[in-house]
Structures are given as structure tokens and as C-alpha cells.
Image (cartoon, rainbow, N blue to C red; front, side, top):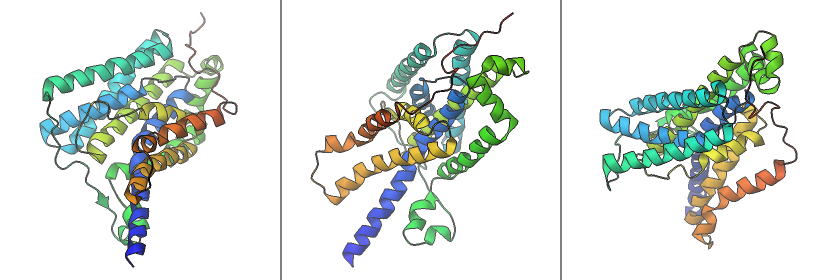
Length: 312
């Protein structure tokens, strides 16, 4: 009896942890899907997640309102996306250099601000990380507590997957986004505003990435610690390539990495005698294996990383 209860609790923990663990990466990856589909490789996604985590925690702590923290993160992400757009779309600077510079600068700035504002203290935001159980469904054995007793942003993120897929592959706007990422000159000749589409895509990427960082800070946890993103932004880029710029496949890829992260906790709970450092590296080993597998089979958008200049 006790063994069956333990197994059931373990399954619930793994499933719930998989969903919560994949949500920050899924949000960032969905935004990156639109960015790369329009021809912009956003390596600043890691920094945007850090900025979202810090700004959401600081705003939530100042106002004592968790929802305002998510709003602040979205505004921060939109601003960073706009700055990136000016640099790579309007000025045509190298996207890789801009992205890496953005990540280094924003991460360092947030770490500095955390030290200036909080010093050596690590306060907690009370009321953060609360779940919203779905009536009736959350009472289903095993599946209910795992899938239907989650944070409200988890439900919204899951709903975004089919919505963003529909927009990207079933609407005129989605067709324009994909056209701009593959044949910008042909799209421009047909009347599509290449610059506007790319601006919208990179701003959306910034909003979703920062919101993903906010979920980690005040959705899953209730505090901000420098370095808490731990490469999730770069994993999101791998997930986008693994999912071949398809939001549904990106969701499945996010689940894979979320499961790898939840396994680190599950193995420790079960008591498997494996070095803890090795367990913590499992998600990143999955990244390396994935890159090896998809390296030869991935076809990038033809205009990715290529600045567009309208011919006079």
C-alpha cells in the first residue's frame, strides 16, 4: 500500500515538475520561433529572461502585487525586443554579436541592480508561485493533481501553442512572417513591410522570453537569484531548431527538456546512487545529444541572420 502511494506521488511529482519546468523554456521558444521565422536569430533571449525574472520580482515586491510583476516583465521584454529590433533590423548590425552583447549586458546589469537594491539579502515575494486548481479535473487520480493544479500562466502557455501555430501556418500574417524569413525581397516586392514584420516578431520574442523568466522567479519560485536562468534561453533556441519552427513540435521539445529537468529531482527522491553533479548536467547532455542528432537534418530559414536592405 505504502509502496503504491509512493509510486503515485512520484508520478504526480514528475508530471507536474515537467510542466512547470518546461513553461519558461516553452514561452521563450515560442517567441524565438516567430523571431527566427522572420529571419532574426535572437541570442539575447537569455538576457531577456534574466531581465524578466528580475523586473517581475522587483515590481511585485514593490507593489505587493504578483500580477503587476508579470506586467512589468512583459513591458521590459517589449523594450528589449524593440532595442534589438533597432540594432539588427534598422541598423543591420550582426545579429549574433548583438544577441550575445545583449545577454552579457542585461545579465550583468540585473546582477548589479540586485546587489544595489537588496545587498546580500534574498527576500521572498509572498503570494508568488500559487497554483490554480481546475474544478473537478484537478480531483482526477494522478493526472488531476499533476496537470490541472498548475499556475495560471502554465494554462495560458499551453493555450498559446495551438493559437500561435494557427497564426503562423493558417493566417495571412503567418504567411508574411515566414515569407520575410525566407524570401524577404520577394515579400517586399509583393507589398509586405519586411521591417515592420521583423519588428513585431522580435518584440513578441522579447515579451514571451521575459515572461518566461518572470514565471521562473514569481510563478514557479518566489525569489530572484543571480544566475537562476541557468542557460534556459539557449536551450530554448535548441528547442526551436529541434521543433523546426513549428509551435506544436516546439511544445513537444520543451516537454522533453522539462522532463529531463524534473528527472534530476525524481532520481534524488528515489535515492538512486548517482553523483548529484551528474544528475544536474542531464538537461544539458540532452541539449548536446539533440544538437548532434538534428545538426544535419535541420534546414534553417534562408534569410536567418541576414540583414535586409531595400534596393533603390
